Image (cartoon, rainbow over all chains, first blue to last red):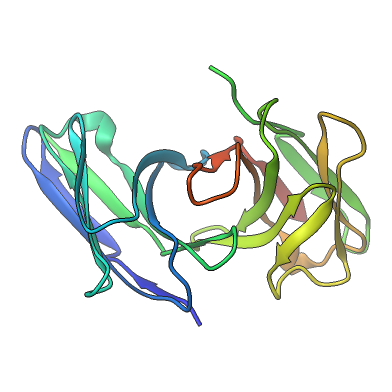
Length: 109
Length: 115
């Protein structure tokens, strides 16, 4: 079975840093993705980790520890437009993605 | 920038009717997917498709569902006899080569409402 856990909601202040955690237990693992999803829209790709460590991409960074089944997405210098749901997704043994329920982030002034 | 497109954006249908959801993947991509998201719930994998056949399907993808690549550009999802619980947003995605090396890019979705 596949189990991917992330917090349901988070709130952070504009200009701050926020860390969204994701833990997973899956029968196969070929990488972990983070997607951003605004309400009523498609998920858009943010980051991909397959090896342990930190991947940095501008204001967004993602970390993976395969031994711990753990990842986080770090968002720096938060902007109001960062208010969205952030989806953790594990690439299973084949081609498909298994998604968590998503973390709804609200950025307040 | 190339993108996945989907039509229609919204579809309302009566229970028991057939619907066909259409997708045009990114032109040089080889792997195609359908996902669905029931309102307020997580994105769920339905099916993956490569080389004109299904690579993998989830338990949601039962005999009521089918996929087809009728020509070189379109990728369709058919639901033969819709049920109320099929109401959801359906996303098509594509990737350029064998995952996980390639990211899956999602289309804007078709919102299906079954009455």
